[in-house]
Image (cartoon, rainbow, N blue to C red; front, side, top):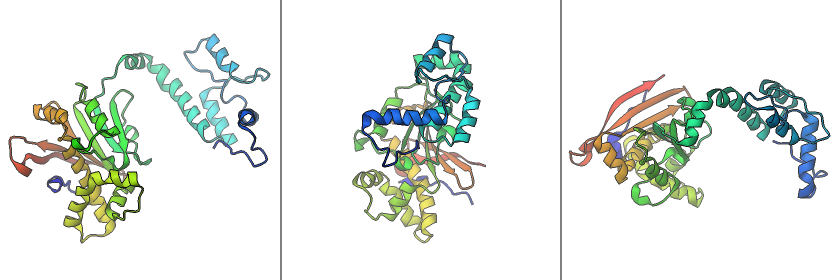
Length: 303
């Protein structure tokens, strides 16, 4: 059945040395001392808009009382970080503080509203591949999308039983604000590559999870077995998206909303090799029989 939905393809924190490896009670002070020497103002002297004097004093208190704390801006922190070779979680801390200064505090009313409740417009199901970040490539903002990421962006059928993805599908069905579910596949997916190799030498959890997309592999091998392995994987990356769209319809809460016309199911394919995005919508016609129920519409490629 999934073959009926085939979308057309377009042409550290520094490690302690052995000598420095000490008991846990002393490790924290040793690491902190090293950080202080490298960049004594990085963590506590930020001048953040919206903080009163007492809050800034509280931040400064977090450092050693004997040190003179220099107040720096986020921009200065970034320069210091580059000059000192700061890595690991220090990079993430700087990015968070920059986000707070440049985004959170300047949009405080929006975040105050989000603190009360969320009303997302989209439900996005994507792969957990580090090269595929739906919030980045689609410009999704906080509060705009409910998102689940898993290996190979798969949606198990309803009868599969509880999992983080199935529970998310049921949970999002309670949001009347969500009108669109988007399953996003991508190029050079390691999960799909493992699925197509079908070697059986992956971990037990991985093998069990990839079995969800077994029909996509079988369909791909039957239709495109004459192509190179790389091309077969590319077809399967799309076929697995279509398989997930069909699986979404096995959830009573989803099928009901789609039938009523208040929810749309979309497929997406992000090719990070040429930075293109292929998009299509599942056309579900429950009044018809068999495979005629399913079709495509609104197919386009964004370049």
